[in-house]
Image 1 (cartoon, helix red, strand yellow):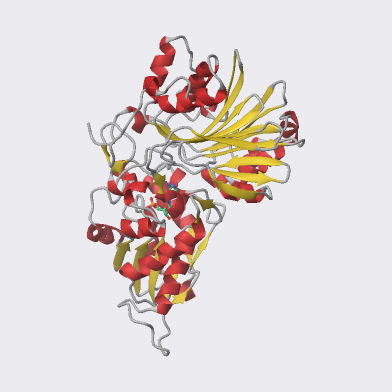
Image 2 (cartoon, rainbow, N blue to C red; image 1 turned 90 degrees about the vertical axis):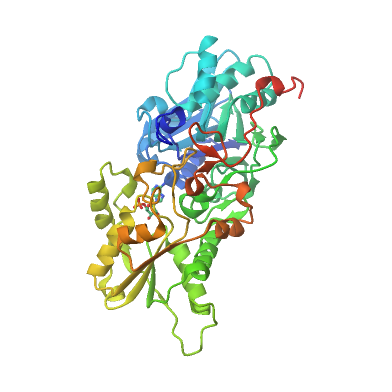
Length: 500
Ligand code: AMP
């Protein structure tokens, strides 16, 4: 079997999703949840859903499509109650049908449960098989339902905190969850903190969300990130919250790609403002591999902050690292590529031909910016190489004399199993090519990527605090057929003291 080939995790939906939960004093939760989902729309466009609880019963509305299309006034009015959770989803594999849309909700003997999940479990099949053996019936092939059933089962016998702890010890992989147990809203982050999750205060309650931009949208204040292995329980009346450090793994595996590409630049993740991270990475890109050129231009929108940091650094020092002389004009930072905002992400085009067409539809060079000039194009990442190949070609056609490419991430050599929908391994241009070969393939005059060390330094982290799976091929979780970069310790359920 090829690495990354036919095994459970590779086939499971790799969900890049957004989650949110709110608990308010005496205001309906539906509309704030709806606004928060709008703020998280970039994390998933396939379906959107909200589950609320009015103190007596649970209400749910889950629909395919964008947030703005998934709800109308009547839907929001029907979602009564002051507490609830929400979800936006974009799966890349697995079933696209509505049974996988979230929040997943279920009613059982001791109440109702709603679950929103961002991430991917590595042992969902194993847990599902065990639960099926004791009579649980599943309606979807997603791993979120597995978490819901395991938790529902534990809740029959123990209190909420212990039940969550047992479930956390049973499931392995990446998960940031918001959970509604009747009218109690919880937030849970996996023991390595792979996907982001943060806690915020509103005027009349509290919010837990994938990204702080959602808290800003609700006029709230970010309190802090939810810690890896931590459970946050919001009071149903919005008056406060309790936290429990349920699992202490002693290390982290924060996804660096959230900072590079996925998260909004205005979000603060694990104490770092994403925009500043991207600017710093851009400056490091200049220090590591700057090339003198007339114009520096970003690939909008993902390359913007990188290009700004790169150009600022380039106007301070030369590519050789010397201070610029007073009569040295340095480089010009220019918006040389215009983006058509109405074209969906190139990624969702199913064939290579359509992906290429989509790049041309999406981006168009401004001739006067590039004509007769040496140009450096800055993007955050190269995945399949489609965007870079097309852009180098377009910019040359528009009259550029030299086209250099600088990338704000290391080469992506392996798939992501934990929440970002990258391509499969054989689609990744860097999976089996050197940088020189990639430069040739995209036909740039020069190409350089950022180093892994620059990423770790900018995030004030050591390599082993980060999930670098897509750039090293070594993962923080135990993925079948893949290498791991750490000792994977999986405590069994029996290791959890009953009275702990
Ligand atoms: P590609 O054209 O396949 O090389 O993809 C690279 C472009 O897609 C870059 O402009 C990135 O900003 C963007 N990109 C990187 N990762 C992703 C992702 N997971 N989903 C969608 N787009 C992405």
